[in-house]
View 1 (cartoon, one colour):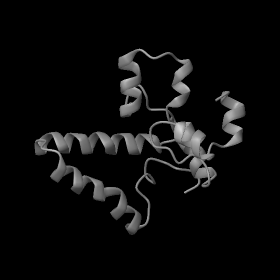
View 2 (tube, one colour; view 1 turned 90 degrees about the horizontal axis):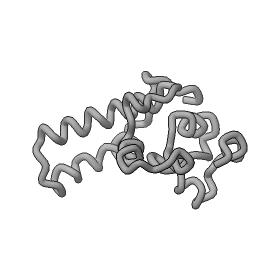
View 3 (tube, helix red, strand yellow; view 1 turned 135 degrees about the vertical axis):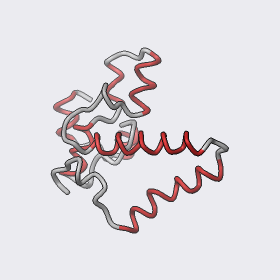
View 4 (cartoon, one colour; view 1 turned 120 degrees about the horizontal axis):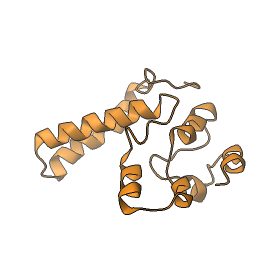
Amino acid sequence: STVPSAFTGYSFHWIEALMVYSNAIVEIFLFPIPFAFFRIYELWMIAIHVGGHCGYEMAPFVPHLGQSLWWLTGCGKKNAQLLNTVHHHDIHHKHPKYHFSLYFTHWDYWLGTMHQDYVKRHGA
């Protein structure tokens, strides 16, 4: 979808869903974590995923892992541009050839998928 919403956050092809969620099966077998903790983690990821597609910034109410670590370590606001935001991800939906990063934007810088309008507007 070019205009994401909380309802379109999980709107993708079943093959993509299989690839995306196969990591959950691997996590269960690789990491000896209690099932209840795993379920809490999955619910948190759903909240982040839905919040990331709602069209406005959910942080600090529903920060993703990167934002949480950033705030806990006290990193400055200048470095916050390295974190993916809802606006950053919205550009991916408007321009599908750009902004593939999940949590940190350095991947888009390194791989040349950062949209020029975003760089101009945010000084990133």
